[in-house]
Image (tube, rainbow, N blue to C red; front, top):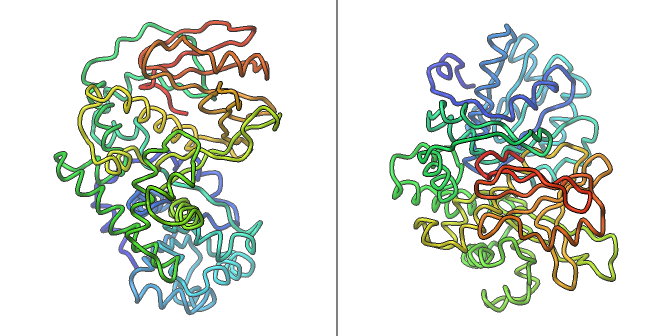
Length: 427
């Protein structure tokens, strides 16, 4: 069991997900936090454990990669209650390593209400395969993403810059105001886009170390999880599918073309893409299609779980000023993650494309309405043929255009369009 006094000595940076967890801490359901390797799940548990300790609540922290800790938990909740000697909050890091995690959680929630469970797992497949459906009503699941740009600024201890930037999201749209963005923030944004938001990458001292860490995140940690999920994985094919995906970023996935590039079957590419999604390294956005005759209805778009992984897959960490076309892809991937990170439980994220060509990057289904979100990081942000087509078809009340630095509002065919700088957009 981890000593909480040792945790107090560590330097821990806050995460935005903490606020979303708070309403669930006093409820009976087990709280499950999933996310890719090295995204900061253990640190999040430590932050939460310290907060509860300060409130006077008994906290017990088990790392299930430690065989001794795992033996204690495998004995079952009754034995655990006797071992602890008092009620409290039980943190289980890497809980999917238990032999039967579903049974342990079910028994604890149903019969040992004196123990509150807070759990982490490295892949969604652990939840999907082992116990999600068997634990309906007994657990609530949250996903921890890599750092947002605002979190990135805090980790880099650029707190003055973080305070300088107004908070703007689809849920908190603000009136445009005069804003001067210092050049240093633009440099920080480019670093964030190029190297992403894995905490240890953000804190690494130089670009070479950052690059090596990103390679490890995929080649070491992802492949290790892959072996847990799949009996006979082919690491080489797995990596090649991931690398080829960089060519499909923000576009409809064409499995036949990918299969040809990798040199495997269409079915194999689909299989490894599902594994990448299960490991939370790749995010999928399905289409919105109210009219199947004229709109794309089946094929999905994909994004990487971190823009640093995009750089690694491309094998290119050079300045985006030298790669204007790629800059748009990085911006679109950043917006996709910002939207996913802050979606409310009842909301859904889609993209829209007509078979004849017009498209909108993202559509948020929110409160019974459609909110189109277009990314225009390159070129003129007010050239909006796809958005105009969507507005004509669906008549949304609002629309959002995320641009490089434009902050204004205008009305387009009765729809209020909010132009927001990427550097302010929080999803």
